[in-house]
Amino acid sequence: MKKILSFFSLALLAGCCCDPARQEFQTQYRKLWNEKISVAERAKIEDSILAAAQKMPSGDDFIFYTHERMLPGEVEAYRDKYAILDFYEEAFERVLSGVRNDKVEPGKLNFYYLYNMGFVVKTPTATFGVDLCHRRAAELVPYLDFAVVTHNHEDHTSWHFLQAMNKAKKQVYSNFWSCSAAKLQFDPGYSKEPFREIVMPSVTLRTYESDHLNYKWYKFNMPVEIVCQSGDKEFVLFSGGDSCDTMQWQCKKAPDLAIMHPRVGGDIVHGAMLIDAKLTLVAHLLEMQHSPASRWPFAVGYNEQKLLLLNHKLGAVPHWGDKIVLPISENEIGNHNLHIPALPAKKPVRIMPVGDSITRGNFIGENNHHADVNGGGYRLPLQKMLKAENFSYQFVGELGYWAYGSLGECDPDFQRYHHGLSGFGNRAIRRGMALPPSDMRKISRPEKPIKVPGIVDSLRRWSPDVILLMSGANGFMPAERDLLIQTIAENFTGVLFVATIPPQCAPRPGFENVDAYNASLKDGIAKIKDPKCKIYFVDMNSALTTDDLLPDGVHPKKSGEEKIAKRWFETLMKHRQEIEK
Image (cartoon, rainbow, N blue to C red; front, side, top):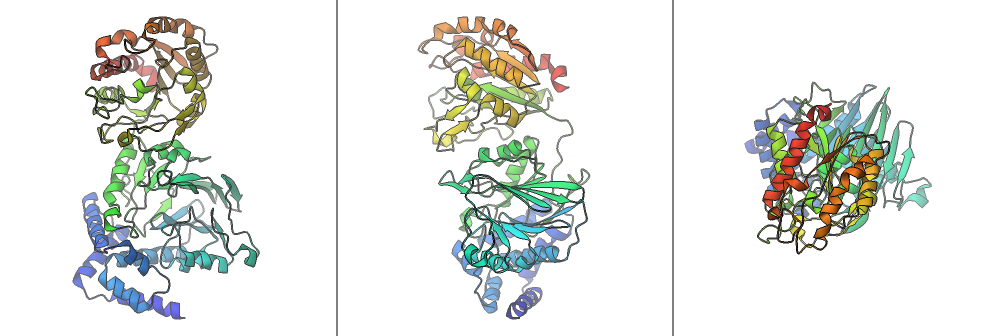
C-alpha cells in the first residue's frame, strides 16, 4: 500500500508543477512521444534535455536518487531540483503503461525503450526485459516472463530488480546472477558458457560472449540474440550490451532490430554490417551515472546514424520512453517519429578490397609523421572517383580502423572498411592469423591482437559482389597466391579482379623478385579449376613507377595511391554493367 500511495503522490506532484520553466520542459519532451515533429524541432528539444541533464553535477547524485530506499519526499525534492528526473520518471510511466495495457496483435512486436541499453519487449504471448536499469524497475516484474542482463554493471541492472525477479521466481538469464538458486529451487539462467541456446514456447535466446571497455574486462559481456514468434511472423532482436569489439558478435539470423553502445570501444557500424541488422538503435546516450562531461549527447548518436546510412544501414536514436512497433513498414521509413532516414533506392555493389598494407593505406606519411594525413590509401581517391560517376557502392571487410589520418579522422564520407592486412602474405590472407596491435595508438584503437579469419570465413561474413585482390608484396610466393585465388574462386560467386603488385626498389629486400612474380599471374589465373566467379587480370604494375614510392621502396605515396585508384576505377567502369547486375 505504501508503494501505491508513493506512486500516486509522485504522479500528482509532477502533474501539479507550478514552475513555468519545468512545465515548459515537460511540454517539450512529451512532443517526442506524442507528435510528429520536424528534425529541427526534435534537435531543439534534445538540446534542452541535454542541458537539463548537465545540471546534475555528478553521477553520484543520480546513483543516490535511484536508490530504492529513498523516501517519497526525498524523491520529489530531487525532482524539484533536477528537471531531467521528470523526463526519466515519465519515460518509465510510459513503458509501464504500455507493458501493462497494450494489446499486441499477432504478427506484431512492441519494443519499449527504457533507459541506457534497457528495453522491454511484448508480443501476443510473451513479455520480457533486457538490461532493465531504473529506480522503479521492480514495478515491471509482475508483467515479465523473464529478463536478460548482459553484464554485471549497475548501469545495466539493479539489485532490487534482480531480487524482485528472484522473489517472484522468474528467470534472469545472465553470466553472473545466481545467488538465490539454491533457496528457490529453480534455474535462474546463470551460465558462464561462451554460447547457449535457450528455447521457450515463443522465444529463443542465443547468448554469446565478448570483451568490455577496450578489452579491460575479458569475456565480461554477454551479447544476446532473441528470436520472437508473433503469430505467423518471426522477429529477431539483438543487444550487444557493452561490447568493445563488435567483431566478436555472432547472430544466426539477421536482426530486425539491434541496440548498440557507440562509446565503449567497438565500431557499431561494422557490427551492424557484420550481423546485417535491419535497424540499429544507437543507445546508452545521456548516461546519468557518468559525470556531465561523459553524458554522451544525442549528436553522438546522429553521427553514428549518418555513418550507418553511408554504409547502407538504417539507424535511429531513441529517447527514454519511446515505443517502436515491428515491423516498421517501408512507408514509415523516412516518416517515423524516430526520424529513420530512408536508404538510397539503388542497392550498392559490395566491394571487398583484399591485400596487405598497400590496400590498408600508408602507415607512415610522406613526411614521416605518425600516420598518413591523407588516410585510407588508394581507397580514398577510388571512392571519390566512384561517387563522381554516381556508382552505388559499399566497401566491406574485416578491418576499419587503419589509416584515417593522424587523429584517427578522415573524410566523413569515407567508407573505411576493407581487408587490407598489414604484413600478411598470400598464405596468411588465405588461412587467417592474428594481426598484432599497433604502436601507433592514435590510429589503432584496439590494444590486443586482432584475430583475422581466413578468406573463406571472411567471404561468408561479408558477402561481397566484387573483390579487388592485390597481394604478394610480402614474401611473393606465386604458388600461395594461386592457391589463394583458387580458394576464393571456389567460395565466391561475384566478380574477382586480380592485380599485379606495384613496383618495388631498394631498400626493400627482395625487390628484384617483383617482375617474375607478376609475370606468373596470368598463367596462375588460367590454371584455376572450376571457378564459381568471373576472374579478370588487372595490370597494376604498369600504372606506377618507383618514383611513386615512399623511401621504404614498397609503399606508394600519394601519387602512387591515386594511380592505383585510377586503375581500379577504370577496371570497375569497364565491367560496370556486369557488376551492377
